[in-house]
Length: 377
Image (cartoon, rainbow, N blue to C red; front, top):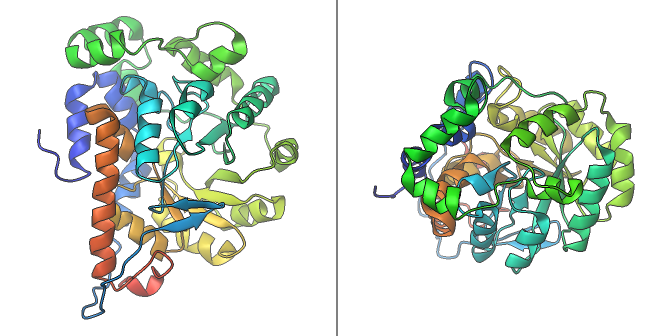
């Protein structure tokens, strides 16, 4: 199919992927109300068009945690990215590096830290959960630091898993899941050959490195389920703050008080996020949560945001509402599934073009110049 917009990649991914993988990345928790609101609430924010502003000079470059980003965009951590394209984390990281933006490796990636980090010419970011197995956490942090990772993204909104009903229907989980996945893979031969056959090993690279044995999809579901820690609190993060001497970002903040607590804790950044609508259904969209958080902590901590961002206009909207940069999750995985490294690179090019149009027609000559004045509120 012809790809002319970021949104085209979702349909391209749906055609190529076995249903269990498409619905795993596409779905949310419970009735998926927050999943829908995440997208709709960005779309509802009107931009204020300005003309005759002399937009000859326009820059999308920004500085974040002592890094220069060509765009105010980071590829977010997404589990099992390596199942969406052959060695998918490596391909996505290369695409991000080629476009001058960071890639964040998930705790539960297919490709390990040691496979991804040497493949790119800029430091990647690494994401970690708070887990019962503190030995794994320490091991992962040590390996990330040894691989040159400087920026740590700490996901804190999964003390317990959200109920993702779509996964049971698709075959990702539920009765006879393994045989259902096998049948689906056989019916999608392009994916089966490129990823299923040529993309092995299909294990959790970082978990396997710690356990000293191969792991698979069953381990992904089982190991994570056993390691969620509902007892976590700010004090449980202190040893990590003491251990990690680089930027530390708290991901999963939706409330202004939690944002203030992150400042008091000593975090360098937060990610305003509802986990893409995959945890607690019915909560605020990130777009609606952002203004109050920005009012509370803007200038005290760097503010990133994810959930529902699907195009360059959404990035401009997010920065106008108070974000410093945006993390892309689903959007880049759709592109990766459809076109591999080239697909992700093209997606970032499309985002850049859309941002340039939006900034030109709202009078913002730089990322720092994007402000709430550009919104027709």
